[in-house]
Length: 89
Image 1: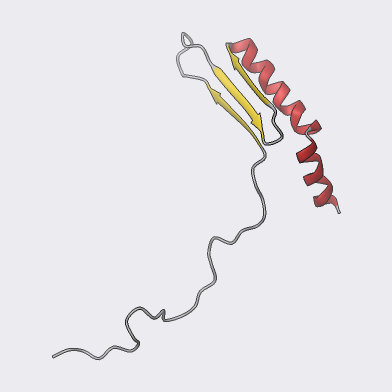
Image 2: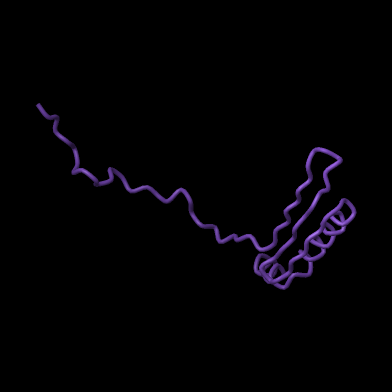
């Protein structure tokens, strides 16, 4: 004997809010550093932004300079400046 069903098949029991709500934030600038655990392997880094800024570095000193350049770009990027102005308003 078949047990009765409370609702039709495929009909949700309750409507729930979407758990993945969009808060409007989007990544604009990225910094990817590859630094292997072994000191004998050369580190590398890649920095890029949606405004068109893109730099790469190979070697310890160059990677450190790229990290500093990436931080500097984040303070001067026109895309990030417009985002920070919107937050302050």
